[in-house]
Image (cartoon, rainbow, N blue to C red; front, side, top):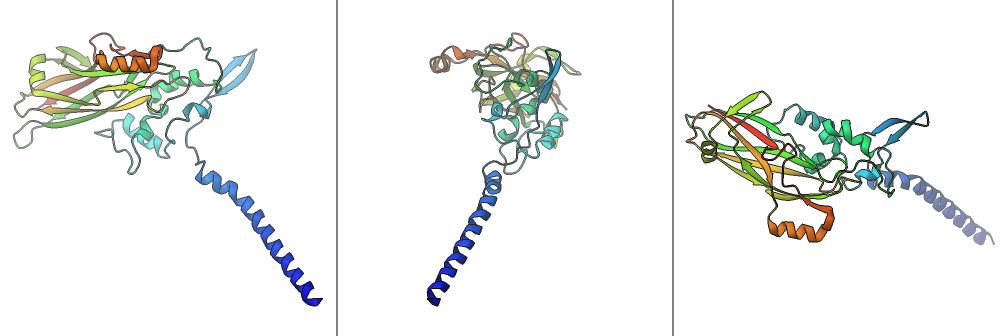
Length: 297
């Protein structure tokens, strides 16, 4: 009898330890799940205050609006500051081990326009609600940065070399269309870019400045009602400067032209009326959206 009783006590001790272990796991699982499956979000909360029936109502942008985008980087504000204040010569490889898209796919990367017009459009929109806003863009896009100035100083008595410039193209706020782009280099006869005035012979500029664009042709996806994962693109501009180029000031731009017929047909069949070819600049026909001034010494 004593042996049976002793065995029974061991069972209760074992069951007690097992129950405590289960309770302990129960307490830790939410913490582990929150850490590994739902990483902390560093994205700031974007809200506006409106007046409804005489009372102040706060409306915020729901997290679902950003669900297709990469996680918001912890050092985002540092990188944004470097870009905004021209602290980086080439806008790429922002953080070791982190793809650049983690930064330029965030709407906050384009803070100037997102703060002034983007937030008020998305704030208060609820997931899966009917789209009934008074504003919804048929098409629209932008590029950031748009203007560049570089001084090229001859090394060892020789001019020339490769110049790399990176810019980012994005769909405007509230645009539900897929937009096709085909870029080409242009050499305007004259123009003023910020504080630099340029007057040049376009043929001379074209002869000594060879431009390669990557990608030259691409598709921007919608930014409405939520941001698609390719609503913005990184565009690299490589300028091959001839060693024989005369000293002086030059002006190179990037403009949009019509899509190649085969790609235009492909996207029209795939997206139907949700597709449009971005064939002209929002600044006006023939006006480059990217403008680069080169001082060759």
